[in-house]
Length: 570
Image (cartoon, rainbow, N blue to C red; front, side, top):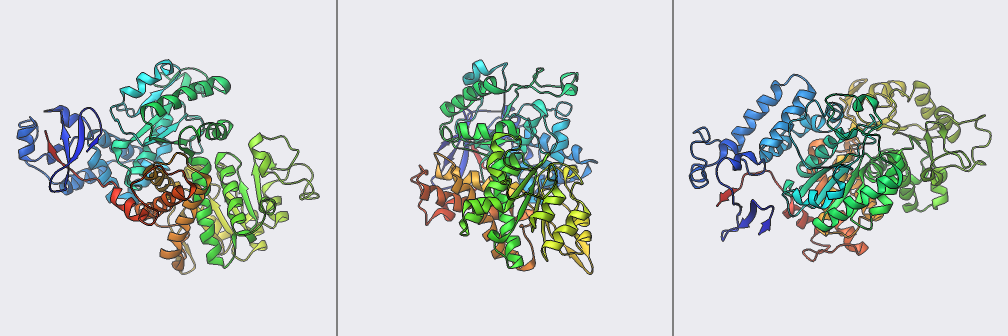
């Protein structure tokens, strides 16, 4: 028996089947999205639960509902309208929502996630339809313990929390970034097997520095400048303490925090509550997973590559760190790995002694290494040429910044350069796959962060792999949940990257794919979650006694939540 809230809980009958026991009757059952079956309430349920006469007489199947809702989805004319329709469905009937997304994941992933979710964040106040999750801010943080107890779920296991300071490539979005947390959790459920009864989005509204938002008559967020420093951390301390007390087995995915705070927040809380930062660690793992595949396709080793990371925010720094660790794993020293990973920010190549944020220091090159490369700051093209780069990863959020000259320089360094413009949304992508393949005469191995159609090269269509964090974070989180991990270790993160790479090697590498098709997200997540669970056991941070290392994958599959209607009992 699993108590989900004061209103409903799952029970297992003598026949072994799971059912939903509810304490509500009548219309309230159709108002809660997690208890509403709409026209699929059976006749006996309608009679027993006080629903008779409140619904149309025909009892539909879930399949019939899926056909009807898909038609309605297709009838919407713009991606933002489609997003708004899906969010409305999620607030009416959650099981139907997840079943619809699962059935049409390829078509709907770009709507509920990047790139459309970026547009939804920008317009969050104007398309607001109803409350979801928790909104915590200086206005209520003094009562944060009461706030978390106002939430109806008793067994929250996964929280996605954002302060909206660095949303995708569009920056500070104030309160509106909560749409990102909602979208990420949808992928935890559809792609990662996490029950929606156990997930919670949290918007940490600490203000905004955007004058257009502060002056907008429709803006729903806190109207003050963004909190920073000690004031910000004091609020975060109270939030983390309240979460730990209310849901002691929950883990937090920190999402879209600015580079100024992302590393500090991760370091401050990762041992206090199991947590990870998707922009730092998830992006790093998905980039490493794809790069391992690209190396295998070219018959090379990761340790032999020279990797240029263009962008030194949370994502870029995370990617650089993970790739360094991957190189060390292949047998070179950390010092050697650092010399092979060149990182640039908006001021050029990171070089020792240059003015920069503290977290970038470990990514900087010794001055002696780059002596004579350029007078003054070293730009991207010079870094590619002088550093003999074989891999170029774009994480800058700056569109159209990888140029033809840079691609030609990459081709001069290596027969098949690897070029991943990974910035999201599509409007922030550093270069289009079509241009990269044209400039390299089809030689480049290309993957992107947002979805792109295949590119025609000669007489063949080249599929463009999507280096989507959704191949990492749902499995990483689900594995940690099932392990009841006390901490999400660096080795658990690294393991997720190699699990992704191994999946691709087994299923797709022979056909030239670097990343799996998105409709295989749940299959990837099972493999990632099982490996993460095993690694948690090896690292001594697993608190569960419900499975063993050898039975990890079977345990993951058995616990994987599926969107289906349960029979109701009163």
